[in-house]
Length: 458
Length: 169
Image (tube, rainbow over all chains, first blue to last red; front, side, top):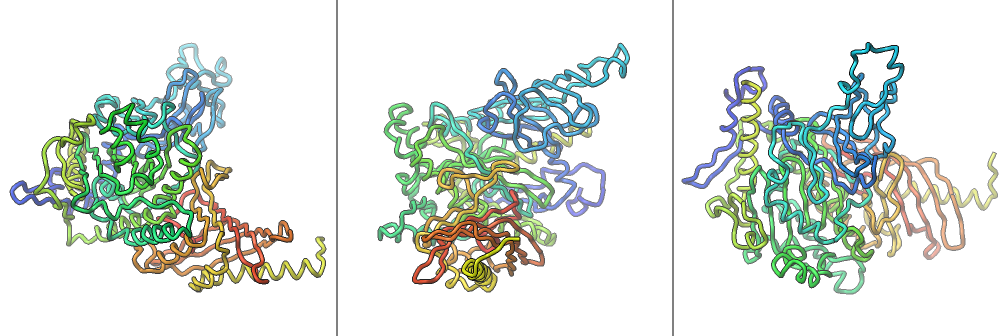
C-alpha cells in the first residue's frame, strides 16, 4: 500500500516496514513523516501500542494510602489506578458495569469505602468486585450472578521502583522483561533514599499541537538540538554564573548543558530492547546537583562507578512509549499522553528522594522550574519546535525525515561503562547526539504495528 | 454600601491606575519600564494546582508555574523572550490584559496588598487563547513611587496550550 493513500480508506494492510530505511552500507537512515500525520495510523497506534502493550500510568507516591486513586487514560480508555486495603495497586477501566458511568471523576482522591456509582448506586470494592446493587431481590432473576458484573480490570498492573505500569492486553511479557536493564537506571534514582522517591505536589501540564512521537524522539536521544533550540537557556546559564560570581545573586547555578556536546565529554546513547533508550553523560558541574552532597555515602553503599552515575552523570531514559525518567538539569518524570494525531498532552512531575533535607529540596525544585516547567526556560522551546515539525510534516512533497547523525560510528551491544553498572543488554549505541535512538524507536514501532495488524487480520 | 474616606478613595484610585499601567506596559512591550516597577528583591509567583481546588502553597519546595525571587531573574526572562532566539516567543503574541475587581485588602505603613481579577486575550499564528485568574500585588513605596515587591498570579487553567510565559499571565 502506498503511503499517499493512507487516509483514503484503502483496506489493504499497511507496509510498516517501509517507514524506516536504514542503509547499512552508507550508514544513512530516514523515516517517513506520514507516521506523524495519518489519523488512521494514530488509531492503530492506540490499539496496538497504548491499548496493546505496557505503558506508564502513575507513581505509587501519588496513591500512598488504601483507597487512594489516580485517574488517567490508556490510549483512549479512561482508567483508575487504586491502592486496595492490602496495599496492592489495582487498575480498572473507569466505567461502571451497569451503564459505563465513570466512578472516579477527579485526578486523585480516596475511595476507602469502595467505588459507588453516583448514577444508580452500584457499589464495588477496591478489587473491583460488585458488592451491591439496589433492589437486587426484586430486579433480577435467581440465576443472576453478581460476579458477572464486576469492574473490568486492567489486564496487567505491575510496579518497579514505585513506577506503576499497566497493559490492557494480557498477552505481554512481564514488566521486568519489558523494562530489561532500564531498571538499573531507575534504581539509581530510587536508591537515593531508603524510603524511595516521591512525586512532589503540583501539576505542570500542557498540550502541544503535534504528534506524540516527536517528543519521544526528542527525549530518546536527540542530543543535537541543545545549542540551537535552547540558545537562550545557554545565555541565561552564563548570565546566572556571572551574577552568582559577582555575589549579587543568590540563585542556584544551572547545570551546564551547553558543554554536553563537547567531544571530550564522556557520554553515550544506548538503544535498549523494546524501544527504550538511555542517554548518559558526565555533568560538567555535578557539584551543583542536590544528590552530589551525598556522593561519598553512595560510594560506600553502591561502589565508585555506580555512585558516579547516581550523582555526577546526566541520566535520561525514555521508557517506550509514554514516559521519561530524567535526572539531569533536574529530576523528573515526563509523561506523554497522545490525544489526537496532532495533539499531545505532556506532564512534568518533579521527583525527589523521600525525606530529603529542605535545602536540597529547594535546590531541586529550582532546577526543575528553570527548565522543565510549562513556563520554564527550555521546555517551551522544545514544544514549539514539535508544533512546527507537525506543520512541516503536512508537506507531503517532502515525505522523509533524516536520522543519520552518528550512525557510521555506532557500536553493537553495551559499552564498558554501561556494563560496569549492570546495563548489559543494550542492542547498540553511539555518542551523545547519535540519531540511532530515533531509528531504534521507529523499528520498535514497526514491530508493534506489524504485530497488531497481523493479530487483527488473522 | 461601602463608604470610603477621601484618603481611601485617593489610594484606591492610585492603586487601580498603577495596576492598569502595569498591564499596559506588558501589552505595549514596554519591558524596561515594566521591569522597573519591581523592587530588586521582588517575588513573582504563579503557583500550580495540586487538585481541582487546591494550589501549591510552598513556592520553594513545591511545584509552581513560575517562581522568581529577585528582579535579575525577571530581567533574564525578558531578555530571553525579546531576543528573538527563543522559538516559543518569536514572534511575540499580541496581548490584551483586562483587569477588574481591584480591591485593597490591607494597608500598613510598609505595604499595600491589592487583589484583582484578570483575563488575557493572546493572539498569535492566527489563533486566539484566553487565560484568566487572580492577581495579588504587594506594593511598597520607593522614593514616593509605588513598586511591586510581590506578585502572585493564580491561573485558573491547569493545562495550557504549548507553554505560558509572564506575558500570558
